[in-house]
Image 1 (cartoon, rainbow, N blue to C red):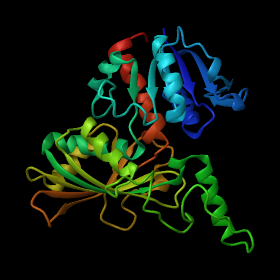
Image 2 (image 1 turned 90 degrees about the vertical axis):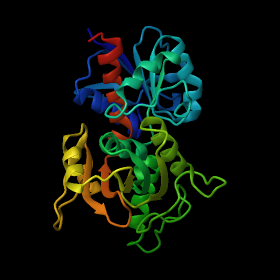
Image 3 (image 1 turned 135 degrees about the horizontal axis):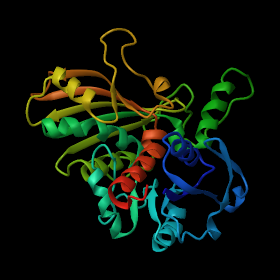
Length: 340
């Protein structure tokens, strides 16, 4: 016996990935519904070897459905997630709306799977920000061995994190660079993204950090350990899919780079590719479509007493969004619902 599953936002980048991953991982589905806004009503989406027609989210009755994967943004989630939850359907939400609610668990299954039990508070589980998800997968096994005091992270985030319009903007700006008269002015981003980097993701806060940077700080504390100090600089780069992060970690006790490498090799969800030679590391192009969080460039930081540097790469549409949501559903099924 399987589950009745709803995917809300099925025509978007993340919603389509959710459907793909549910099929790829053979999540036990008895019935599935693909929901979208009224303007996308009837659009066909793929689910394994099947084609689904989208239904109207506004009119959908969640009664009798087990799990709903939401990828519709905070504004729409604010309207429809409580309706689904009240109908007895467990919501796994990819927006930022519930991440900082103390009653809503924020879950990365490789890190804090036990937190899914707290779904009962509101019948909602939050999916973390894309840049946070891959980082905490790397931090947790190291934190278990030698407690982390402080993390300094710089991100190199792909445009797919901003949606389809951003992908189109990068593509069109890149083409326009080579065709006189077809230059494309920025609209999604405040500056040109083609052949450029932009140290600005989400809105600026009063202290000079951006909301994306604040998310990494707050979410790492909620998922891993509130005592960890985090400082982040988040940068948008001209890459279509795949986020990269340069992470500097300071521990309370010494952790040798070789031991760290072995710890990460054994950790769930991680693939270590770390050869000290040209090409002996993973880049965003190679991570696309993969489930793993890739770790490379593991090395001691001699400028602090107990420091380590790592390079972390992952498919942001998968581990940073759709995959993590499906993994939460799997964890919920295995630990709580136990229908399959």
